[in-house]
Image 1 (cartoon, rainbow, N blue to C red):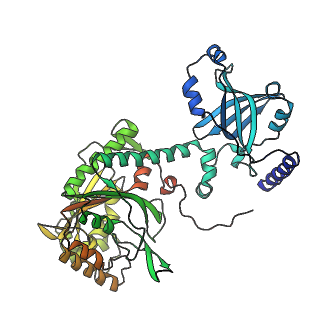
Image 2 (image 1 turned 120 degrees about the vertical axis):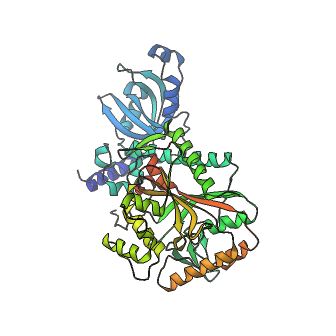
Image 3 (image 1 turned 90 degrees about the vertical axis):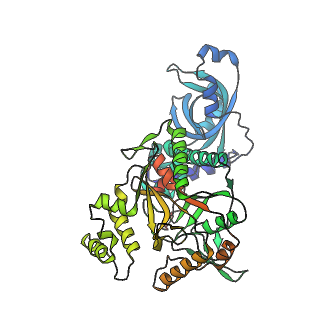
Length: 495
């Protein structure tokens, strides 16, 4: 039958059950055990030992399979901890209850109560003494309950994906575990977790296009934050010398396997530290996560072996271009020669583009994909780093790094610019970029400059993309795989 025909049959069954006075959505169940708790307690018990205890348990979950033998049946029930087999026998539960059982459908939420025994195949099984319908499923599970493989359907209907694909549920348990490991590590290093505004009057802290909204009561435009940076650094000014936040950022940009307009980031700030200190700290943090998850510092991602053993490779933007493009170093020191070289590579470069931006275009197009093992890229041009501290030996560059793994940016960090005069000048440079048509250039933030005038201690800060990190550590090819509800185009929903 088609899905619409199956839906019609189930609605008719619901009407029949209601007519017989059977509660379809009761709310009086007391669950006494999960499938995991039963397994953990009795996994090593023999059938003889199980027969002597006489304990009874009530489990509740989704009916996932039925193998009927007339007056008896084996079923599979699935709760939050996994699946378990149960044995339903007419002589054990009575005629009325067995009649109700025969009217249940795959996907219904049920409860079973009974003791535990082992079948002839030695499978731990609940011997059902009572079975109840707890919530009637009107719609059938997809693909005859054997799985859900269509990627778009999985993303659009994550509830179905979680029901029928156990590995997906495991992935999101691992995501939660990774975030908890991060929190524990940060707390062990004396960081305070904080929350900063997600609606901001100025979209600051990054070079990105924001989402815009309007607050009626305040009569003002607001932006969904593109980064929490400027608020976190205000807290450092206020004396919270080690702070971090794990929360959402929003950027009105493209969608791809590596980009979702709503994404999770951890951003943290450490007073009296430099970007060099944060490279070591990042090695320690990610290596710790890796050990906790895998018991080693090596793992496989999409067929590539990734090794987190410190120390990780470090090279400047210019050094990486020289190494992976095989170009003469003097070419990327001269703007006109760099433009000519970039155009020879087929890159689109405008006549008024600065040398720093030209270098970054070459880097992004020709170098990034080659950085498979953890690699810190340092010494970013000042034009693309409006909040970073200048390098003392060459003011064209900043004390900044980005961490790349498998050709993807995982983290971005720098020694913070804490000179309010320099910061104002950088914002003014960004305003010129905006006037020239760059929608991602930073706006002037007078309040932030004023905060710096109260003195911010020398500080280093970093942002780590949680979604991309989870992708890496769960061997997931797309960012949509690790976000429960990724952004999708609207689609008509059939009723």
